[in-house]
Amino acid sequence: MKLPLPAPPALALAGAGAVLLYFFPYPAVAVTFNLILLLAIVLDFTMLPPPGDIVVQRSVDAVLAVNERADVVVEVRIKGKGKRALRLQGKDEPPEHFSAAPRLLPLQEKGGRKYGASYRVIPERRGDFIFGRFNMRCRGFMGLVIRQYAFIPDCASVKVYPRLNLFSRRELFIPSSILDQPGLRRSRLVSMGTEFECLREYVPDDDWRQINWKASARSQRLISNQYQVEKSQNLLLVFEAGRMMLTESGSLNKLDHALHAGLQLGHAALLSGDRVGAMAFAESICAYLPPESRPGQTGKIAGTLYRLQPRRVEPDYGAAFSYLAHRQKKRSLICVFTDLVDSRASAGLIESALALSRRHLLLFALVGDNYLTAAASAEIRCTGDVYRKAVVEQYLLEREQGIAFLRKGGVEVLELPPGADPAQLVGRYLAIKGRSGL
Image (cartoon, rainbow, N blue to C red):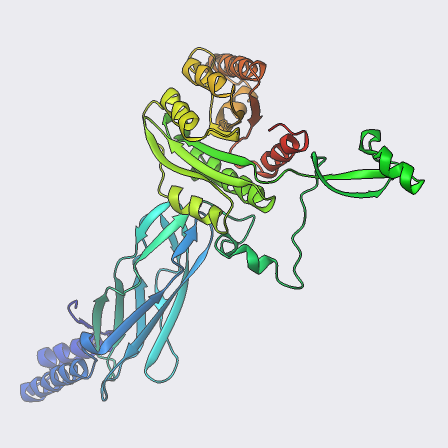
């Protein structure tokens, strides 16, 4: 409990008492006035509820997402009888890296000696966070004194996951059987594929290679084979958490953008019937989840990687890819979220990738730097801009040479600038499945 404060009416009356005491010719009257005022303040304070009679509850979702608004609801209940409070105000203490509005909360009476208020927070970082105290002020029945309280509600810790704005966070954790209830239909991902599904009548847009000549001869009309995207294949989402992923774009770093795109890709792969796993590494292996297709796998991946933060270390690509080759024997599509410097600085990355590509199909999602792209196309205004632009263009040229080296070795490469729509990554995944790349 904090120390009580005099309310503005009490300060005004105390000032009047001081004036009476100084100027009034009858000191006894002035002293009596001040004593009555002091007794009224003490009585008003004693009528306020003690901290033990106040119960504060804070409600907020246990799982939040970066840069997504969330509502925090605070409820206050005053126990006991005879204790009254007026004009309750509260101020919550959200975690660090949370923006909150409004900061000062007027607690509205809901009846039954209950009060409530709500406000919105926006998490700006991933990880585990803890709410602090809830501070409250209330005035006495006569409005002469303000009592201050500090409480620590039970609901204090939250988890902040990567941005999941393209699909509901609730959808990450619901069983797939719910999606198969009567009246709900799961849409099929459209692709050429090579897995036979059924026979149907030929249409002019069909490829002639789809024609089933035996079935056509029996039915006396052209019949086509219909194929569907292959299912039960493996997709590994691999996230680098080294120094290359520290660069920030807006309020998020490259790893944040990579996790965002990776979760969208994993969710799409699970909907198409594939198994999805994940791995994170820096100078050592940070996390590994084997590929699975069970319900809630995307939520499991998000729950494993939401604490992952990039570190100022040199990533060990050789050890990471050797670990993958040892753990994953079946040919899989491995999507690596990283960035490339040039063929010399990234020689270890390129060498390890080409070795792993002999068994698996690699897709490199390169999370670039918007600042460098903007600097290369910026207008030249002074001599320093000339040198800056020359360095940036040389860097981008060498980076392109490294990308060309990877592509020449059979590695798929996709440029994924920070904030780019993950749909292009999902589209590349579908294109790989459509041409039976695995």
